[in-house]
Amino acid sequence: MITVDNVSKTFHAPHEVKALQNVSCQVTRGEVVVIIGPSGSGKSTLLRCLNRLEHADTGHIYIDGVDILDRKTNINKVRAEVGMVFQS
View 1 (spheres, rainbow, N blue to C red):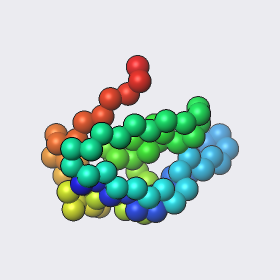
View 2 (view 1 turned 180 degrees about the vertical axis):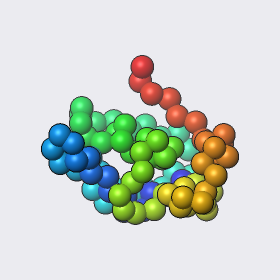
View 3 (view 1 turned 135 degrees about the vertical axis):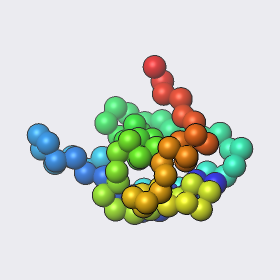
C-alpha cells in the first residue's frame, strides 16, 4: 500500500511555487491509479516525490509501511518494487 499523508513541496527558484499543498491519498496493492490535471498542477512533482526523486518539504510517504522520506530508508530497495509510467 502507498500512503501519502499531508505532503507539501515548494520550489524556490526563480520564484516561489507551491507545487503540492497538504496532499493525502492511499493506493492499495493491485489498484491502478491515474493522476490527471492541467499543466503545472503538481502531477509530476507528486510522482517524483513517490520515488524520492524530489524530497517533500513536509508530510510522510509510506510504501508498504516504510517511510520513504526517512533518509535512512534504502530508496533503491523501494524503487525496485514500485513502478510508474510517464506520459512520454
